[in-house]
Image 1: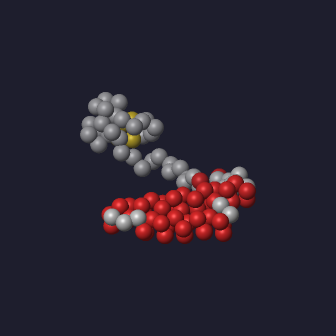
Image 2 (image 1 turned 120 degrees about the vertical axis):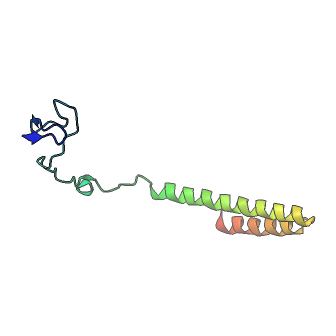
Image 3 (image 1 turned 30 degrees about the vertical axis):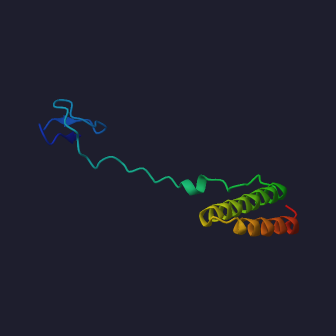
Length: 102
């Protein structure tokens, strides 16, 4: 039996509130559940990315980086008022694309 701390009414052990006044009952009589070990229930991560897909993704990332470099060179050229930095960047990126067979 749990006794209400407000009105003194005895209540059932499983009750959460007093039957008479509705006050929340405070009891340490409830058993504590064992913690769930989630990491033991998890399966190992399996990737379905094949080496071919990974290589294709890396090629796409590389192409995006080359595009970003050209965009930065274009912005710098526009700020400086001369197109010389862009010409050099285009030449460097073109050589990299040919060498890397992108």
